[in-house]
Amino acid sequence: MYDLIGDIHGYATELKTLLTKLGYGVSDGVWQHPERRVIFLGDFVDRGPEQVETVELARAMVERGSALAVMGNHEFNAVAWATEDPEYSGCYLRPHTEKNYRQHQAFLEQVGQGSVTHQSMIEWFKTLPVYLDLPEFRVVHACWSPESIKLIRNYTDSQNRLLPEAWVHTSREGSEAYEAAETLLKGLEIPLPGDHHFYDKDRNKRTNIRTEWWRQGNLTYRDLAMVPEDVIDSIPHEPVASSVLSGYDGEKPVFVGHYWLKGEPAPLNEHVACLDYSVAGGEGGKLCAYRYGGEKVLTADNFVWIERQKRPLGQSAAH
Ligand SMILES: [Mn+2]
Image (cartoon, rainbow, N blue to C red; front, side, top):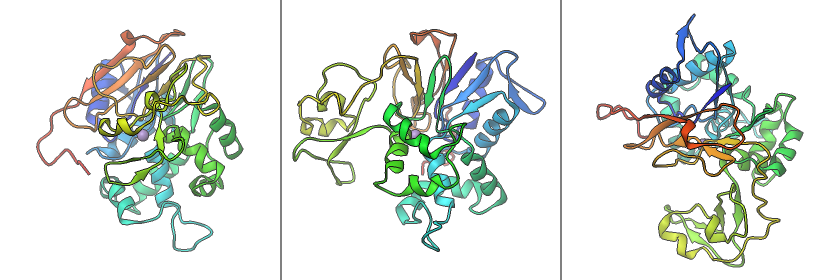
């Protein structure tokens, strides 16, 4: 059976504490459990102070067979940042703009841009499956979208890993491969009807909303919108057509990370659990796991978590 672990974001100390709490220990240099295996939900890196240690710990577990893992949006971005664009010499699949650099700076500084460790990490990130469809449950970083999975299958191998040539396709804004990867790794966005729009925290005009894709029933744009509280009133209470958002069929439980949840960990509904409880988000953040026991209906009782540790000022790496 499996223990699923949400976004770690470079908090290796909390990861080791959580693994210990779950009954794992170091044997032969690798964290393992006599009967259980971990599944990591992606986003090993970005933000936190111990990103190299986090990746090395998780990678050793995967290579030893004591864990499985899927790719998060930050692993995807790390590969695209480090990969030259084969069609535009001197450019990278993720453009080296000031904004993209700042977002990636904590990782690049810790790993040493271009170092052997960096290159080796990028090679490992490329081996991470985009999703897992196991007999008992499903795993993806942000959104289980059957349409996006069908599309991405044109770009993945038999183990759901992006094919070498797929990195270009999934990096080309507007292509079907790009849209599918965005949905699976960053969540489902839908366009607002008519001229509706809102402004994000950087004062950019937005005409799409990120959605609570796991919800079922007759819902409006405002019901589904994941937007800051101060703009929720600009999202209309018009019903969303079922062709736009099909909801999740509940055929098997789904585990995701990605959403920076707060508060007491619990499933989103009977079939969907998010295990990202903002360990990198400052005070009150948690590193969260779900101890799966074969159940078809998910339960709050199976959540296990560790509070984020207090760190001396200056060591919280808040890039
Ligand atoms: Mn994420």
